[in-house]
Length: 411
Image (cartoon, rainbow, N blue to C red; front, side, top):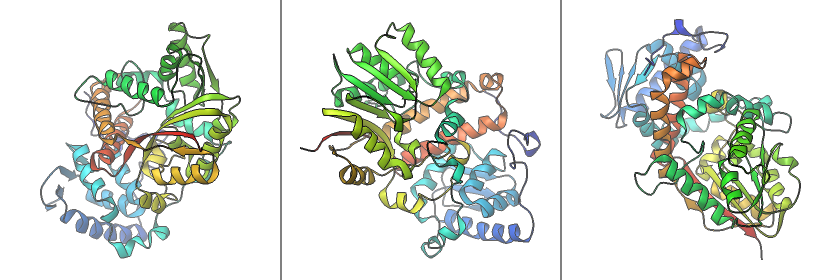
């Protein structure tokens, strides 16, 4: 495994614009002082250990070391959680058990900032840039930012099914087995079998479509990723199922035809809250009488969803432009108010996502030298590791969850 501790001199400003510049000036100094005070107050009562120069904060627990305090607080003061993540990318701070440290912070996320100051949130946090809103004009660029990075990159840390979503674990079984269980449960919920006309929104690399076709279904699967489509077509052909599966480079809003079942795995998160109604109305439009819908969705608590939906996050900037997580409640409200779809009892599986992410990160770190040979740099390694552990922390702490949601027509 390669060393994941770059300094600022390793940063290529062409690949990481602005990341090599530390905030300076009077305003930066003031915001840094405020950030230092708030950080110290928040961490002081948490079960963590944070070393900042000669000082140590926290009640004991996962250890973080702030190597360059001036940079750390300058970034945190100017850009809040985005700056916190960027300070990790530059090596201004580190943690040996990154996921454990972040899990403690995630569990306390609604309370890290004193409640009176939370009312000023709208004046401080940045709003998502207009060019990242997942409109018909922007969606393909948003998807390409992440999913068109490199098929080879994803193959390095995913299992053989190339499933890039939460598996469903029952014990300590191999990741591939848990991924197959997840897929088969979704297909069962949608009652996919011989003769089913299935629409999949979000193709991934084709595994769900292949398994549905093996049940005797005819599958139309939609993607906006050129790279995913190329490899999905290749895998489908190798399985001898090209006559039963059509992979279309098409926005979900332009779905055509009538289907007995619609399945979508962790796609609604990329839609953006502005288009959730459109997403479900599209599914409603193409679903045949008596049809079923099965969706796997990463979710967050309803109150946090409402509080953060206009917030530009580190994940938006570096990983998923335009993405935002719904709550189960808002999905239920939208489908009841704007469609004929009615949701069955949700099936929660957040603990499985924490385990899935742990497996992915272990595989990614083990393959870090090979990631470098693909043309990615050390800052990318730190970014991807932070992304996987940051996500793991959300599920391990219970701040995030993932649900399989089943819908049928209102009676």
